Length: 537
Image 1 (cartoon, helix red, strand yellow):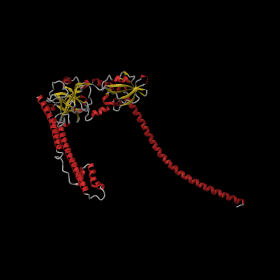
Image 2 (tube, helix red, strand yellow):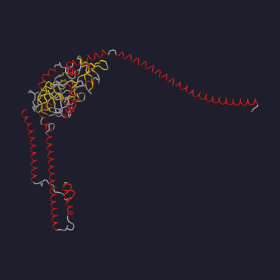
Image 3 (cartoon, helix red, strand yellow):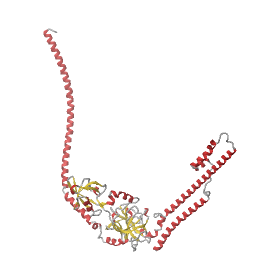
Image 4 (tube, one colour):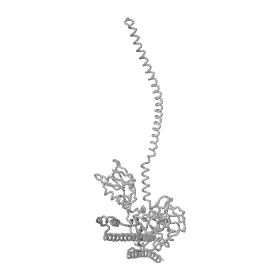
């Protein structure tokens, strides 16, 4: 059966190449035939309309015709325009030029017709090629017979209403294998009928990044696992439900199985040695890096990483080299002459560092890369078009048997799969419950729990301080409100007094004016009285 399918696929591919070759040969024969007939077979007869002749002529044709119409008459000696020899010469030359123009026009039309034919042929050829591209319906149909049973055992893993990965049924009693690092939130598995069943993570294998889910279902279809060694370079493979609208994607093994090395851990800082071997000074913090999220600031001086003393930049690099990506570390930092501690999870240099920005942009073109795409004990590389949410599903060979589980979209044209040889034992370990999330993540859980306990102990008095401060704040707020009320009353009283003051001021002004008038009258009367007394009036 396996040999029959492989031969069928090979025959179809051979047919495609024969179609293209025959088409090319027919085109060549047609062009040779046209050339042997001087273009007469395909040429269109020139139109009698002046516009048609003008549109098809070249610049050189127009210059030659203009010289015939006017320039020649100007060159003839005056009074000899009726000379017979001159007339014959002019007539002959005109006929030759006309014939040359017609020949040129005919050849131009013939070339245009041939160009049009070539364009039609190339268009048909492109359509033929597209029909047999790896993602065309015609090409995918070749793999339908081998994908029937595997399609049923390939399920979508969802978080809410959003697909996060594909899953592979590995046990009829509801066990589904998938990619661990893409799982988030409340998980479910969408069944072929569209119903979503709640899924629980029963085990995680960190080296392979595989997780085993359990759903309440029985009698699930299980695909057949290959007993052959890891597929080698050049083998055709198919991934069910990884393409658009749930179609398969087709690819070829491009690199044999090998260990995939880890990415280097990264804090996300630029640094320089501080004076007197007292640590490293931060000169810049890379945006959206672990250091950025941990509030590391420029001019901070790192003097310790966990229990490792830091004297210079080399110490930092050597210390980080002892950890893995996502490990949680504590930085001892000197800021404004005060020692503080900052905790962060180490990131991936390949994702964050500025020197990787260009390559990451290129790798991300056309596809969403997996969050974890490095550090696998053994994986083979293929060129099937996947993305982050279509990993975790099976990949099969031309016999329809599962040869691996897609584990990462690693680059622009590369995907990674864990071979079956690495998976069988992992599945059995995950079923035992010994790799349940709380056990696998025990160290991280303990570390975070200790950190929370330290925070609670260190800041246990904060609630009391908060209560005292709230009480004092409320007291002062009440006093402010009371004073504001007093100020409002005083402003009202002040307004009344100001109004009375204005009235009294006006009365005082009138009184002063009246007194001044009386004083002047009195002085005048006293002067008159004195004059009367002395008789000098």
